[in-house]
Length: 255
Image (cartoon, rainbow, N blue to C red; front, side):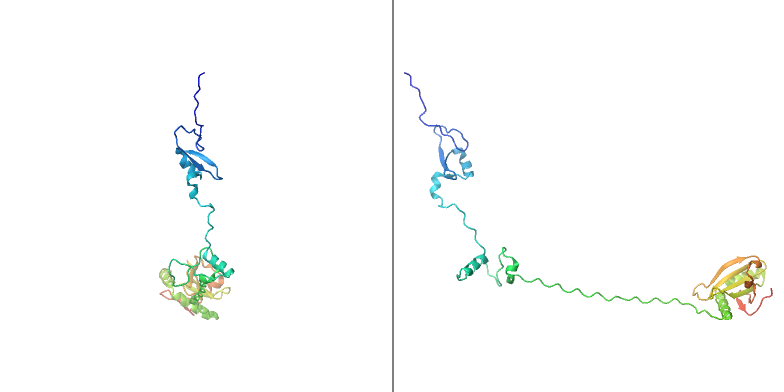
């Protein structure tokens, strides 16, 4: 009878890469969480460590408990606990010396320990507004006093006319046309104004004199050629003109 050769070892696979372990290839046993034994080839040891597995040969060096230590409590939490339990207080160990009280830990709100926080300074009151500077009153407009008597109004109007530039115009025309007829009459509807008419046979000029105006009281308001164009009350010749064009009161011109 012919004998059949069979391998004398069982086939073993790596628990990481699931590759069959070759004859003579070294393997290591790892412990997975829960105490399960895992066979790992030499090529997969780093991956086994990454999975959190530990070598079985190093199991005896691990601590008995794998629980993480409780986080260290804050300074004031430990002091409060010792006070509640009736234990003597302890001086906190500080890394450096402080001339004043040490700063409180960042996890304690400011309102819990107001002695460690300086109160915010109160806002200074706003300065009072500067006094309002009152502007100086403007100079009042100078208004000439208006006479109430008709004769005085006419005299004042002729005085303003003689101070203007219009007498030169009258003098120039008079050298050509001769002495003019002149009428000065206060206006009934406007008490502060006087109508002045200077006329010749072929032309006439009508001026309006504002007794209350400070600047430019004399204005030419109309002119024409025929005396009949003028109202009858403005043809009452009660004044006269001299050679330089100025007007005088009290001398009636012959019409």
